[in-house]
Amino acid sequence: MDHEAVLARFDQQMRRDADADDPSARIERTGDVVRQVGAGSDDWNGVIWSDLDVNTADDAIAAQVRHFTSLDREFEWKLYAHDRPGDLAGRLRAAGFSAEPEETVMVARIDDLSTDLALPDGIHVRPVTDPAGVDLAADVHEQAFGTSADRLRHRLLSQLAGRPDTFSMVLAMAGDLPVSAARMELHPGTDFAGLWGGGTVAAWRGRGIYRALVAHRARIAAELGYRYLQVDASDQSRPILRRLGFTALTTTTPYVYQP
Image 1 (cartoon, one colour):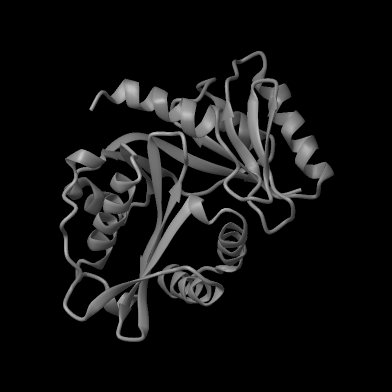
Image 2 (tube, helix red, strand yellow):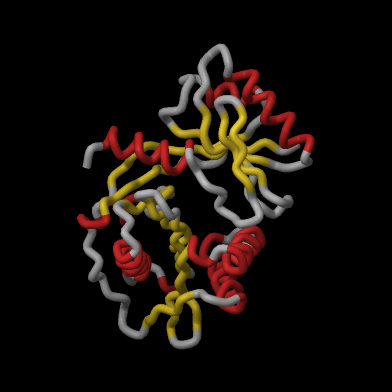
């Protein structure tokens, strides 16, 4: 895989030319910044792309702070390691942003992945296609990650009602018990499908469920014509993804501003 070419394609398709990830949100392009503005406080708000330099960065940061503060919205500046200027992270911290844990953007060419990984005995896949399924997925998320799933539930219900073709979500079930949940964000017209979630409740970890759900989503993405899978990987999932054939493209750090 040509690292620089794939990174340039990722920046162009998934950031500079991004579509809103929720039917109720909108993309705004102002100067050298691309941002998403949600319809309400439960939606994700933030800066997706910027092309700044040492002369323009501080003014652009201040403009985004003013904009989202006027809406009384917390927002995120999604900073990538290769974004300019090189000291953009320090400028964000100086402006009052707080950094969350860094993640590694990992990418794999779908044709290079093994998609025949089977689920453990006694586990089957259940697609999420209705609000009841969304509730089960949100419950698994809270058990797996120990954080509130209110925003995730709101987003999934919005996508399910308004643009069901932009995501695919599944539950791994042990009988009637949901033990893992994973979704895939679909971006029509691009080469990339994004893997998110993949949370497994503690008692069911270490059995290959995460790997099998990656393979399951890869098969769906291949059938839909996508070329690459992309993951913002945590320290826990990065080694698993590397063994499956993913490579690190860059890193990303959420910088959060609370008005």
